[in-house]
Length: 380
Image 1 (cartoon, one colour):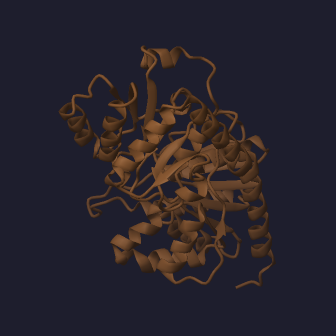
Image 2 (cartoon, rainbow, N blue to C red):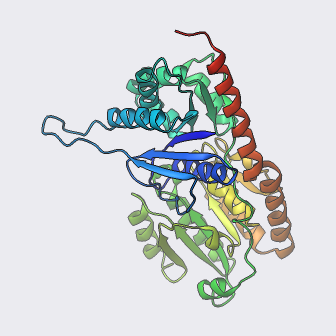
């Protein structure tokens, strides 16, 4: 199939998932055409089956902000027509599904099936700003197929938008050949030269990730178990987190690594992940850690319980329960047998339920279903 994919090219779950879907599909013989304003960060992959089209925006004094949604719609239509796309798969409803709808209408009577994948904040944003509700609901309803990355997000979408149309739940995935435990201990010895346990947190450092809780949890753990904390990522809460580290005199034990193009190497030498988020639609980084045999201590919110089985792959606790999460972390890090058991369970969970080849097969089946439905539908 010839598949167009649009996503945000910056760091973030939706862009990462969309890019990985494209790479996996290309490896399975499909022709992939990425359409965005920049090359996706994770598209560090060379293949004759992967193509990229840049959306160029008009800078004109009349426009305070360049009309990206319109420029994107035009480019979508152009690529779909010239490359004979079989379908367009857009990630994140705002504004991508709106642009896709415009592109589809521009191409009539040619039929361009559009699939929208919902990732989280494109839906939860409506809870903070209701002005987005009508246009988001419209674009979802006008998509030929809709998927959500978790049962939690699917059901939330039904409630927020009062939808009756079907939404297919296809979860995020992990390539277990890429994310796996490392046998090379050199990086671990460099980061923890005295054999300390390594805890890791990966996020965009936004308030919803509760990075201050990460520092508080580590402060309690460090008092009980010799350990180091790796903070991977960047964002508005980083300066506050760095201040708290200094205030608690943890500077020698906490390392801020900033954004990393590939976190697999870091996860593969870690002993525990901390994910005390306010909410998560899925928790992709937790799944990546699990594939590397790293147990996760996380908040029991959103889609996280669909990924982590409490007391089997890791531990779940209420949001803000710093003491409880710290106690669980100490329990894991103090017991090698327990940590190994949880890590092995986590790896099996990732392989059996969320491996890339299983989930990509589900996307392929959904593509075929949607294309067949569009092509067999009566004309306008």
